[in-house]
Length: 375
Image 1 (cartoon, rainbow, N blue to C red):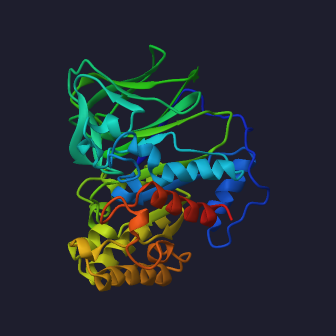
Image 2: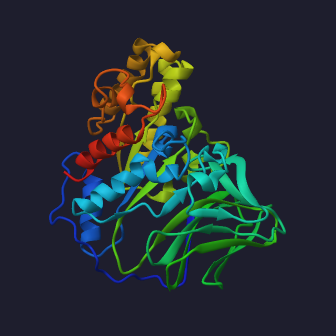
Image 3: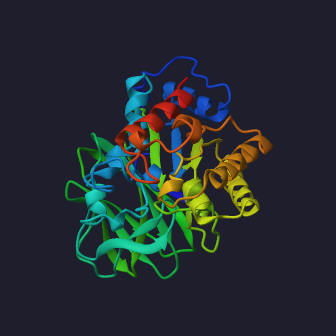
């Protein structure tokens, strides 16, 4: 991962209302980052690594739609954090996950994102699932609508020698030109511009095709903790530790620079019958990667329903135990236990289907997470 900033390089302090002497005892890096933010330094960063539950499937009536992104627990968490005195924002997108499968396409799942002619969701993956791509000579644009006025956009773009050049614009004015024709990586470019209510627009300009994971919209004179939803529908631990390209999810984690990575990757592994030894090794490798930037908090998924053809409770319990063992072996904070959170077994009243929580279930996860990160 590499980074470059275009435009202003300093940000005025202010706008932080959070608690003084903030400290969550078993999350020291996250706590220090929040204190830095409160003192007017950079924003604290919380990265949510997960599967379709993290991405939000089932949190709305149509599964992915309408606007399933807003029903996902990371987005709910950001609202809860703000309501409890720690300003937070989920004005980011970290890959398309699997939500291009939504009826009406990705934008039906996340209407903050629109894609014009030549832009779409690509089969290539990086960070939270599938990448967005703009074809060479495409006339359209990829646009992101932030939740409030902003003056910065951290764009996460794939670089490779055969790719092209993009422009980033706001209010119809080009603010930066970003050349991705360089060695393979996931590069972060911070683009500065006059305050705007959006959208932030990315266009192909020249050369080959271009690929982005998305980015974070923010305002330089306001501090809000970043809650980044990198949910990836269908993902297993193995998907997050693939290293064939440096822009894959594993290589991209430093692009988000998380002070706290929340990892919940269990349901697809237990329903696919992943061998326990394989699962533990993979989760350990992912944890070690996340520890290079900050704290790690593991979480186990809500129980699937064996009566609907999903894994037995014994198989689910074996994966759950593996998560606890990895956490203990690496001295991590105690994981959030999804089995206990959902009452010990499949909780039909909190579930959309045999695997995914409904709106009430998503809210329960968000509240449990809120209690852990802003004690």
